[in-house]
Image (cartoon, rainbow, N blue to C red):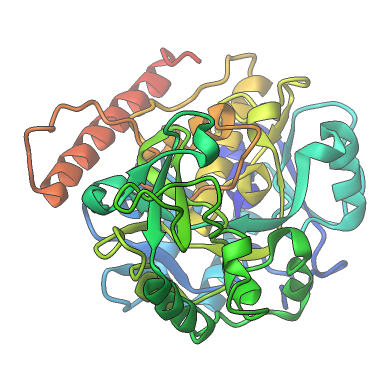
Length: 433
């Protein structure tokens, strides 16, 4: 997805591109064809309803003349407010577009080593082959390349019931860095029964290796015994319930997200449950009864680098400016997010080839917020991100509007206006990093 978009963006700017795809010579455990842009998880490219963060990102990509968005719109199928596509038609049309495009040499072979020099975009995806992954690990440092993704849910801070939550760290260390939800014995047992009975998302065979001791799904931990969670992610030690003055029976800690000042991460709640099940079960936690989930938990196989340690917001390597990372490998989640980083990588690769400075979209835009999260996120606790309003920089201009949907519509309008101005500056040659 990202590599195809990057190649097309660079080529349409007059740069000769060599696009290397290992399939069908070497297949992955998830793909079944050799076509470009094969969707393997879902045919949905998320919501296309105005006022949502996924809509904003897609609309920015449309205005930036994204090839993959154009093809997706041409082969879309009815799916309510979501942008869903005919998967076969999508990959077939995309492969045809690249074959017909001038300036792109499509090569079918496996890249086993990072090229030693030149302008290179690495967009090998979450199932990067072992030899190339080893080469990336040698370049990045093995501690900066991950192969499994354990993601905890993120909730919108504005939808939490603060009267039922307590700000504190365990043993009083670290100030009031966490929000805590305290559960009585009865509340915990009801939560436990709902959790172990919840329906899991279907596993693909190659994902079973994700379930290792370091990041077991919370529902798998729970199945080991009724008190397992109370000695793990829900341990109450070091905390005092101000309502009783005693240690609670169980506790859920929520950590403020770095660069997401209006959202909280449910610590240790990585899981493999279906999304509606996560919402149903986790809303049983006191204070989360009306919580809106900006991101649901996931555990899956996913190769990605520690972007804050390695990348500039232009997606260039800090140690080698001609090396650019894009797609899920650079630390984003989702098809559209991957396309966005591929598009920006292609623009900057072309600018490098033309002797121009690389560029970054404005922080108020969805594209700009994504790459800034990658560059300036927490390198100690980095996790791949989907686009959410929590990532977007809010000017506070609409703080007087009480209706949240109306505030977000205004935020989308401002972001698109910023993107339009940035696109004009690129055309005028005025954009600077």
